[in-house]
Length: 545
Image (cartoon, rainbow, N blue to C red; front, top):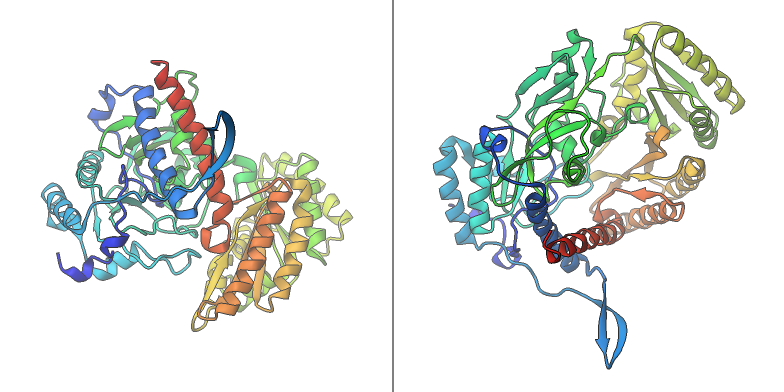
């Protein structure tokens, strides 16, 4: 292998007990006979997942110096001490990785492996992600089946090579970055609808299936898949990140729609989390373990998804307000009134200006705080919900209430929300980048947090907007900054950190990246979850269960 492709210095090739250790993006899915006849039990699956989790825990402890509280007997007294894990796990050497690639080529063929510089960059760097690292994967592989994924995993296990699953690559938070090099597993060729069970209202798909294409393919059945993140997202990554979307206020997140997963574990073992019935109380909830695990516990190669009935009628309304607090307060009251809106999104005046500047939607919008509503259900139900929302928004100083008259007009009105990210990206000049944040708080605190955060963003004297899924108490800030101006970067970090700290004080949460100052909070949370998990598993093992 040409030396220039080995982007990772030897000292950075930190080894770990398990290679599957990096937060990747898309998770992947497929159901071979080996999986159906597998002798793996729930306990055995959890054992290996626990070991993988332990590797993640060791890595996070080393990287962030996370405090690990333990009781230690000192002079006959118990004393709580904080131990900083210094020992660095080690990945395979450059020679190991080269040998692994050689073996993988014998499995996938020459056309199933690439070390092309441009392809490596596509799989290790994202221009719309706030988080990027200066290391790329050493190779990208293209399996075509669960069995081939398992074969790749066995080789990587043997040589201690990190694996990063990849499907859509649309993540905003660096999920498919490769800080330790390793191999990116691209599911481009695993993009099939394996089986559509119309009467059972479920579908079996591979990880590179697009959610939008899936809905297009099954629309004549009267069914659809309701989770709607970015338009380029693929099912594998949506499972891996437990993604959300504008429909989450009505339909929930990805975890609510997964019936069964086929998973390749770190050592190449193939397992299934459940079977096809929607309801089961047998064993552990392994779906809950793998959905949202971001590839750290296993590589998903096939997914069974629940489907919903397409509503009888769907329409869109756009409502403008004089202030962001008025808009946020109105949204909170709509939820408190129990109105079953299909979606409810917020965009501030800056974001509306961004959409106007881009020209992507084909119309001019009022540059004021705006709520976007989607109503769905029976015709009578939709009309009743619209009437209630009109009354609530009017009490909160609503200025205009524009209701779509037909389906095409509805798509046009909703386009402002769907084009928001791309509109912001289109505004970049020179060295400018978009810094995206993601916080959520209880609904009653939403107006407070948005108003305070908006004030802080204004103080930056940079182009910064607020938008988000306000029906879930979740919003994003998008900040345009010059990445080559250290003073600007530090200013943004401080504002984002304050935003996150306020969200946590309000009993909220954050899901941003470590570069936005969120990593410390996230790492502590993840480490504590892993400690609890490993303690439970250790107790079970010590009891012979």
